[in-house]
Length: 356
Image: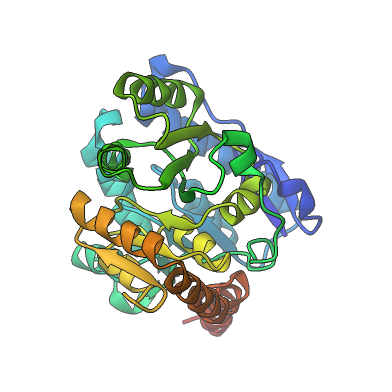
C-alpha cells in the first residue's frame, strides 16, 4: 500500500506495510493560503502520475483537504475508483485564512460530488453535503475509530502524580489541541470554582504548540491557579496512552456539530469515564449515564457538576469506563472501520468492472 503525505507522523515507521511518498508542501507565506494549497496539489498530482505509471493502483483512498484536486484528477486519468473521506467543512473552519472562500467552497462541493463514494464522520456532516448536491446514496457515515491494541486499559501509566507533585488528588485530563473552539477557557473557569470550593482535583492539559502552552501557563500563574490547572505541553503520540492511563476522569469541554472527536474514542478505549458536550456526533459514540456523562454545550456549570459527580463517586466512573471500552471495541475500532471501507471498495470495483 502506498501513502502520499506532506510529512511523516511520529510513529509511522512502525507500519512496515506502508510505502511512504513524501510530497513537500509549498510554505511561502507570500503566496497566500489558497495559492499554496493549489500549487501543492499540482506537485502532488505529478507525484501520483509518476507512481501510478510505475504501478497502477486498484483504488484510491483520500482524506480531504482544501483545494485537494490531485486525487480526483489521478482517479479520472488512470480509471480507478476513489473514496473520499471528509472530516469537516474545512472552508467554514478556515474561512479567516482564505483569500477566496467562494473558490475553496466550489472545489469542496465539486470534489465530494465527483467521488465514487464519500465517507463522513457524522450525520450532520452528511446532511450538509447532501444539501449542497452530493447524492445521498454516495455518502456513508463512519465515525472516527481507535487502535484498541495501542489504547488499552493495561498500559503502564505515566507517573504524573510524582512529576507534578499532586499526590492523591483526582486528575481530570484533556488531550488535544488548544484552539479556541475546544473550550480551554472553560477549564480556567472550572479551576477557579475548584479553588473556591476547595475541590480535591486538578485539571491536566496535554497538547498545544510551544507558544500556546507558554501563554496558557502565564495565564495560570497570573490567575493563581497553579494548584488546579496545569498545562503539560505536547507529547509524542506514542506516549498518549500512558498519559491517559494516569488520568482519573477525561473531559471534552467543547466540540462542533460536525466533528467526531478522536480523543473521545481514545479515552473510551482506555476505559476512562468521559464528560462531553451533548452534541449529535458525541451522542453517536456515547450514551449519557452508560459510557460517560453529557452536559449542555457551553454550560460550564453543568460541565463542572458532571466532573464533581465522578470525583465524588469513583466507582461510577469505573463502571462508565468499563462500558466505554466495551462499546468502542465493538463499534469503533480500526478493524471495524477497515471492514466498512473494504466493503465500499468491493462495491465500487464491481461497478467499475461492469462499466456502470
